[in-house]
Image (cartoon, rainbow, N blue to C red; front, side):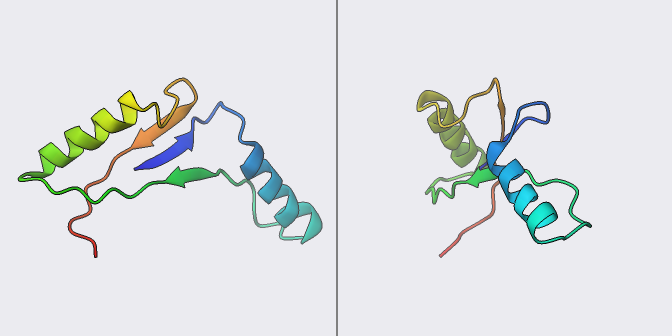
Length: 81
């Protein structure tokens, strides 16, 4: 699951990183930085759709992200060890 701020939402963490890179380190080719969160769930399910539904349910019920300011993308990546 990847959680990012929507384009119009401020991103103070990304802004701080960009300021460090651009102003303090002089890397002028960096134009902006956006931060986010990455959560990895290892789910045992018979079908990919079951795993997807379970993670969607968890994300919504536990309010892992705020749909007003965040975009949440859930990706099925196959088995990970």
